[in-house]
Length: 248
Image 1: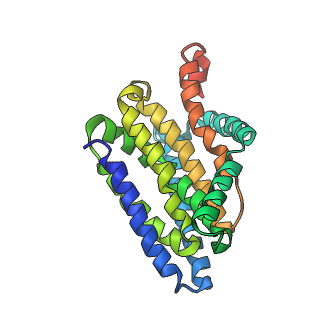
Image 2: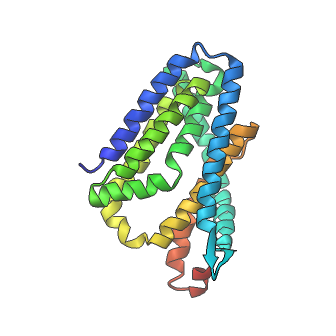
Image 3: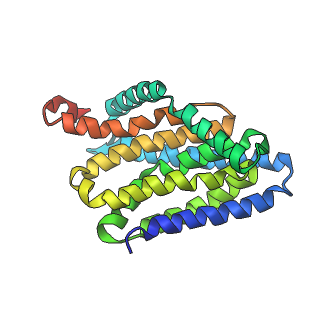
């Protein structure tokens, strides 16, 4: 059944959030702080691992880098577009609207943080893209089911610290991941393995930034960097007319 992976993914997040919200009531604040730092540390190194696998390569027995200029250009141009659209603020405003409507404005602003942080983490990354393509093209949900397990565990931890806002992350995940699955047959001919690797690498850098925010309580505007994942696609098509771009 095509789309099963995304359905399972959404269900595990819902179940994990329910368990986390249940645990939140009896969780002392010092536990919340340490748990968030632990989750940030895990996210931090997941991002490092994904980015390193896309940027580092072995050639003639020596370690070298690749696609570094593509990464720099994509992030800079993505930041310009993201700031112009102010994606982060729009995400926060949507989360605040939902908080007012569904939770009576409670949870001390953590509702919005839970929604934005969980949405970015669940949607950005190699498994979301590759898994959705596999589900749509071959009816194989195994990658997304593996992702569902990881997301479910993360949802427990997020919800235990940030509350019910994590529930809302199911909506962008369903639209984004499910959309890739439904469109897989149309977009797969243009998504080469190299292009998917480049998109995944940039996604991993954004995951690294999410972990940085969680660990150090900083505010890198990851939402405003989201357009960066689209620029490898743009450069891929432009390289047909300007071959020099293919060497980025």
